[in-house]
Length: 153
Image (cartoon, rainbow, N blue to C red):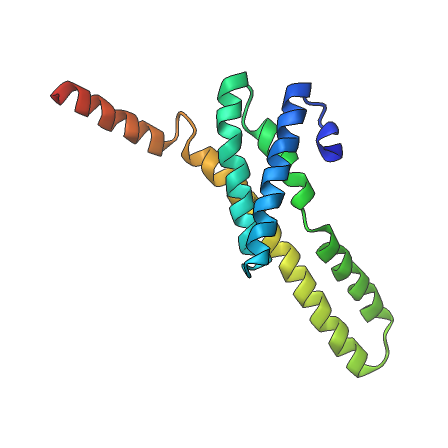
């Protein structure tokens, strides 16, 4: 909730963003316990948060992003990014070749993990918002099919 306060949202948005963040974290944690990778679990959690933010947005007439983005902030992979920077700094000061190789592995592993988690969060947050927005091609196609069905029957 602390991250959400930065953008100064209305209190009802803040409370719902906290609930969505809790739902997202619980789902990601459950998936991680089942052996799903952290990037895949983050993608599923971000999709869930984004999908759940849409009914809230309709109910309170506020953009869904106001609910989804603050709820996603706690899932940003800060520890992986920190470990990447730390290993990079140690790599620059290391002289032993074996230590440099070990640090290089840490840099690549933590950096790629942070990158893929961030990509998963972005894709999971944006995909439902684009797909189910009123003016998206998917929603327009569904409306068109409904109109055809109601005129034929």
